[in-house]
Image (cartoon, rainbow, N blue to C red; front, side, top):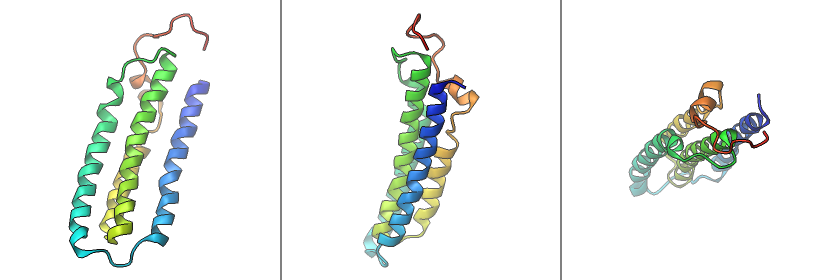
Length: 141
């Protein structure tokens, strides 16, 4: 496993921990009773935003052009974009939960977190996000 790939695995793990830390903060900071008008609106807005972000996390990264730094940097950069989209999808339900107190949002959080877990930088995922040719030939790796 290359140094870049190990760094990617470490970054993925760190991005997986942050939503759990924010969940702990949200659990202590949340309002006990949210504004009734906001509960349904926040739930459905959260579901919609989660679907958009998770979809973008799968569709957008392969469309990013190759980085001049090489194949490994391209795969890492594309994965970072995908992880950031999933992490933002996971954070929004927690913010909405703080405001509304709607426990269904924890389920949305779980689904978004699963989407991030499934983006582990496995051999297959790494190869699928690396460009076919090295954009920086002759570069020392």
